[in-house]
Each structure stands twice: as structure tokens, then as C-alpha cells.
Length: 234
Length: 234
Image (cartoon, rainbow over the protein chains, first blue to last red):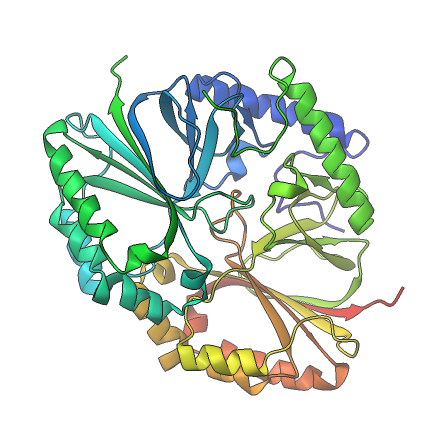
């Protein structure tokens, strides 16, 4: 039988658990160096085989983003935290607070013309002036997930105008959508959206959320947290 | 700050790595007991927080399914193995052979009438007479994933009749589709489909694959392995 080419972890057949631990510690060292987050414990997969589209949102006492408000819109609350760090890769757990995870992926609903318009207008996260931010984790109910693609699209856009509403706030509001539903672990939310914008655009951002929350689509959302952020210059 | 309610791992702040290892070993014991697969090393997440829709396909010298043929249809080969086990949950690596992972999820392409017809006709895996099986891991190219949903659906069904072709072989062929693209690790395939059927339906199954491989959709597939199986009665 050929060697395990799909699994880049080096093999140590007679000491698998020792190997496992040392790999975990090596990854821990890498992640700690990258994020300066004490008390986080990564998964024992080498950085090389982590999904490069996966991000962890770590709520604790440390991090780049200071939490200015954290509100539960619907469903169970999330423990309050002082700071949030957004980390590329998979952080398994923090000593305190919480870790949410999600992966960016291909678009599920946009048409070609909508996609082309989005590509023309949207901007990337991290502009110097975009020192305000928000994280909006949401979960949709079982009724939503039992719908077919065409039924979901009809509610999402033809009825609720989700894409059209978002488009009105481009390029002021930058956004990155993360999918959580098909990760290896059960995640408490289906989607996490990370936004950033200039402080002057905060009320426009509020208007956008007010519009979205009034839609038919939002009736399928059974958990939503609204976390507002301010970037700390170190 | 409230405790880490999103992370069911018990905390041991002063000995996180020791806790980490003992959790991993406990999970290892559970998985080994469940699968009798020596040399597999699970991820250090408790069974309680694993995605219940996640499955691992472990190719090695042991397992319920005997490999009767393993052919590379397109792209890089997968190391040849003698047996395959299909395990609920996440198996991180095997001592030898390979582990592929995927999660069942909501349907991405069917219309309501197609979904209703599928629900009427399809059967679950594991019928007593279904002692023949197949695993078909496929990967689609970047061009496919850059298409919009409507463009993918048009190729998938209106042009390639993927659903209609599959429907012709129901209920003889049972099937379970697993998505691999948005898992926490980079997986070598985008989809894994597991099939089972009675040996008498083997040539019908071959006809189905011949039809599918002749479609426009299949031009977007850049890696495909065809693994045929026979269930071993122990």
C-alpha cells in the first residue's frame, strides 16, 4: 500500500500520540506567534492543510477590535467580551470567551449581473479609514434549510432584496461573509459577516441593518448577535 | 466575562496541553471502539461538538468494504487500498492509506418538483441486498466555482440532466452526497458520493456513470476516482 499522500502529517507509527502532541505544540507555537492570543489551543492539523478560506473570531480580553456594544437581536445571547480578534485559520478554543469559525466560499445566490455589479463596487476589508467594524453572526431555522435553492433565492432577493439593499451601501461598507454550517465542528451560527467602515458611515450601516431586519428573509433567522467594534491602533 | 459557553471542551487553564492530549486520547478510545480501525488519530474535539453530518472515508487494510477496483478517471491518482471504512465523524489521519472527509448538507440545485420526486423515490444506504458499493470522489475546477449559482444550475441540469439521469436509477441505487469544500481542512476533493446497490444492478450503475461522464458538467471535473466495493459480512 502506498504512503498516505492525502495526509501531510508526518507518520510515526509506533508513537502516534507523541507525534500528535508534538505536531499540536508546533502548530500552537505558530498560531500564538501569529495572533498573540494567550490561552488559545489550535487543532492538530498542520498550517499547510488548513482551509485557507477559514477564519476564527475570538472573543476575549485581547484583540485588535474593541467591542463597543454587543446586543442579542434574537435567540440565545453570546457571552459578553471586551475584545475580538479575527484570525486566519482554526482556533479550537479560548481559555475564556468564545471562538466562532467560518469559511469564505463561492456565492450562493447572486446572478451574473448582480455578481458583476458587486465586483465593480465592493472593496476589501482593512482600509485605513475603516476603523469602525461589526460582526453579525446569524443562524437560520430548519424551515429555511428545508427550502430548495430556488425557494431560498426567491425569498432572499425577489422578496427581500438582500443583494439590492447591500449594494446601496457600497463601497462605503466593506464586508466579508463566512459560512459555518458545513465545517467539521458544529458551529452555533450558520453565517458570520464581518464589516468595516469609516465612523462617519455608522448611521448608514445602521440603516442597512434596519432594512434587512424588516425583510421576509429575516423571519427565518432564529439567532442573531450584533457586535460593534472599534479598531485599536497599537 | 462569562465562561466559554460556545466551547464545550472542559477548561484547564494552567495545563491546556495536558488537557488537550487527554481529551484527544479519550476521543481516540471512543473512535477506536466504534470503528476498530488501528492507527487512526482523531481530532481533539469532543464527539459532542462534531458536525453530525460529517463522515470520514478511511482507505487502509481494514474495513467493512473490500475494494474490488480502484480507477483514476481524471487527475492525480489516490494510493491503492484493500479496504474502506466509512465512519461517522472526523478521523484526522490513518497510519497508512488515506482519509477523505465530507459532510452531508442541504441540496444546492434541485427544484421543488425534483426534490419531491427524489424524496418519493430515493432509498437510504444499507439495505440488506445492497452488498455492492462505490465511492466516487470528484473535484471541480476553478472555472466551475467562479460561475454563479444560476450558471451552475443551467449546466448541471438544463444541459447535463444530472438529476434526471440519477432519477432513472432510483430506487435501485442508493446514494449519499458529501460536501468537502468548506470543511476546516483542505480536502483533496469537492464531493464524495457513496453508493450502494444489489450486485444485479451493477451494470445499471455503470450505465449511469457512463451517461454522467458524457455530460457538459463533467468537463468541469478535474479529478475523479472510481472505487468499487463489496460489503464483507463479518
